Amino acid sequence: MFDKFFGARYCEHSGYTFTNFFMWRKMRNYRRAIEDDVLYIFSGNEETFAAWQPIGAQDEMQDAITKILRVAEENFGDKKFMFVVVEKIFAEELERYPHAKFNITPERDNFDYVYLAQDLINLSGRKFHRKKNHLNAFKKEYPDAKYLPITEEIIPKCREELNVWAEIHKRANPDNAFIEYEQAAIHEIFDHFDDFNLKGGAILIDNKVAAFTFGERLNSDTAVIHVEKADPTIRGSYAAINQNFVEHEWSDMIYINREEDMGVDGLRQAKESYRPIKLIEKFNATLA
Image 1 (cartoon, rainbow, N blue to C red):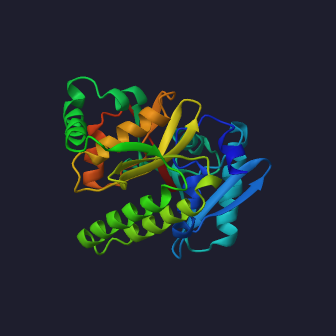
Image 2 (image 1 turned 90 degrees about the vertical axis):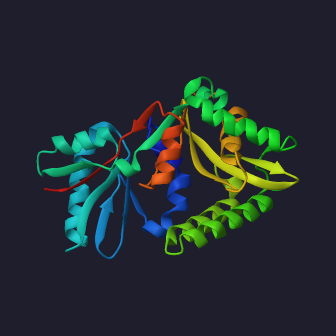
């Protein structure tokens, strides 16, 4: 059902895959409904009721906004209402809406980073000099390292690496509850890996997974990378899994969407260092 709606249009927003909604459904308390061939997705907590961008024909969007506002008014009382991380095309629909005014603000922490697939494969030129050095250092230090697609046989080894990665980051950030939640969400994906339209890859050193990743086709020319984890004590492990995954699984794509940085300084620096060709803007909107 989700794939039917998401696949009916060219969407650049990394969040609009079934995998993403499945992974984060418990944390965000998603609800969904379909009416007049429009998919509505809601999330929220004790203080906030949030509507995601409705998915359907563009000429249905003004009516969809009316329906969402009616649901919010009739069911959620004093909760704060907002549209969350919507694409620019829907933000423009909100600006045109005649029955209410919205405060629309860009959410820079949620902008998606999009790269040319061939840039990530070849790492050519001065702008990728440091990345190429990291990759070459990895190859020199671990000449027997090998890339393998994720299969049922590889998944237990990926789980072991995930748990190592999580423990390192929990010790460094003991108050960050998101780390444990993400760990559980990835394990759940591994529980059902064959049920998703995912491709995955892993780097093995001495038969142990040093890094793994998975993603899927987002639209006709773009793949989205949902997860990438690597042993931070192995220099170049992130560079190796990044380059190998795109080369082996996504060389037929023009673009690679590596999702957002969530406002984390180190993650932002890492994603900017790969020289994105564009950022996919996202916006929040509240009633003025």
